[in-house]
Structure formats: structure tokens, C-alpha cells
Image 1 (spheres, each protein chain N blue to C red):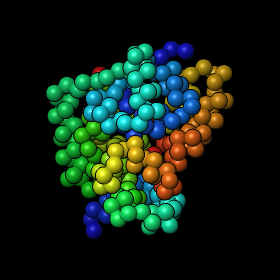
Image 2: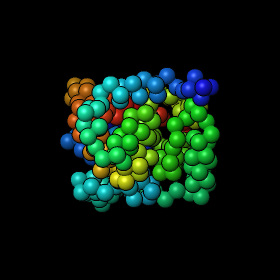
Image 3: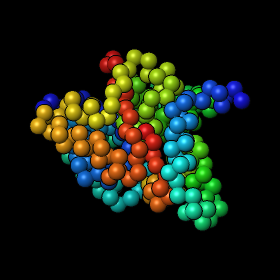
Length: 172
Length: 74
């Protein structure tokens, strides 16, 4: 199985994913998952901190320091979210993930789904189901467990309903 | 009114799911600040802002959502 390149993770995804007993499957799909510093600052619980620290130590997670123009783009997203009634309000950590993900990586965010405002934000992206994305990258022998994984995610991660999709930005 | 009409149908659907699955008896028993934060989250789905309203961190608020049976709709 070959790794995909990178992903960027938002706080909400990490705190839920850290509870999943097969959480390290994430690192079979992506070589490195970037975590913006602002996101890291929001993580507090022992379980999540321990998992994140271990993954950082093994270069599976990587701290991401956003570029100045990415921060500026994130700030514009925050402002736009306040002005656009069809767009839910986003705060800076999540907006940073959106800005980074739009440029270079696959974005894992709890909020990512199929709203029209996201399709406008990611005009050149392909939507896919989270479970199907994992299946695509992992070995065929793991498909059966992945079918269960996609279903298990709904329960094990703690009352999460209907994992919809993630976006894959067009590479630059 | 225009803003409501423009609201994405998926956001409306997500709100309805949160409303219908929430444990309202648990929510109504909470202190005012927590109660209103939970209600805000049900309406808006914005965990960061709801957590700030509750005076909690995101992870702590996430635990509260589990106790309140309020689902996270993705």
C-alpha cells in the first residue's frame, strides 16, 4: 500500500478520532497529517494529547506553521463567514485548516460535508465518502474491516451521525 | 427572511437531527450557561462558539454533547 501525501486536521476531527481504537489507520492512508499550531492549542484531554504527542514523535503528525498569506486567507474566510448567510461562522483555527487544505492537502474537519458554501470554497475538488476514501488507499484484504469501520465510526466516535465526505483539493 | 431561505438544506437537516436526538430532559436540568450553550449548538452546530458560551474547552464540551445525546452531524 502506498501512502497518500498529506492531510490537515482540525481540532474537532482530532478529538473525536483520538477515541477510535483503530485511530492509527489514519497514518496508513496519509504519510503525514499536519496540525496547525492553533489547533494544537485547543487540545487538552490526556487521551488526545498522549496520542498526538506520540504521533508527533513518530513524524506521523506534524506541526504546521501557516504562512503569512495563509493566515490572511484564513482571516478573510472568517470575515466572509460572518457576511455570507449561507455559510456557517468559522473561527480562525478552522479557517486556517480550510485555507491550508484548499492549497495543498486533504482536509479532515468535522464540519466538512456537502453544503453549497463548501462547494464554492473548493470549486476544483472532488467529493468522496470518507469510508470509500479509506478503502481506496488500504489493502483489499482490509476492505471488509473498512466497511465495518465506516459504520463503526458512527458509533465508536461518540454519537457521530452519517460521516459524509472529505474534499480532495486539486494539487497545485 | 432571505437568509433563512438561502440556508443550505443540509444545514437544516443537520439541525433537525440534532434537535430530534437530543436528550432534552438532560439539557433542561443544566445550569443556565451550559443549557443555553447546548441549545446554541443544536441550532447552529458551531462547537467552538458553543464551548465558549459554556465557558468550556472544546474537548470538555464534546463530552457534554455525548452526555446530552446531541449528535455530531458531518
